[in-house]
Length: 158
Image (cartoon, rainbow, N blue to C red; front, side):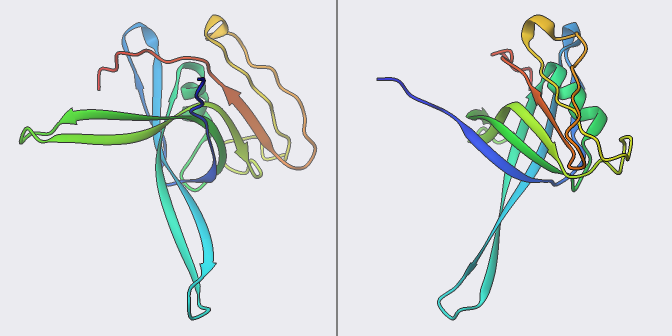
């Protein structure tokens, strides 16, 4: 039987992405993403619940993230859930869950770090073309930029 591990999130960056460059020049970026939902409780009062997700992006997608994403920006993420285990300083087994993104679209207008003219771009990145230029297309007044990356290394140094 086949299985699917697919996550789709729309949220806001909790802080600027942290980017590392590994041996061989491979870039990896990490950032927290907040998603919020509102609902009414038993008394009819409006409540809000925020969920935090640890996002990881690789290679060309990480380089685009480093250039264009800042704290507070809205972003659409597609990827897969990955859980890692490790031992802390006291030898206790710990687990962390992260979203490994393979597609990303910046939402909203580009007022910071961009051209500020309201045009967007669409970018795609694959392993074979990791260092190639991205293609751009205009999307009118609404700005969105899409990015995708295929695979990441299985042996993480951190």
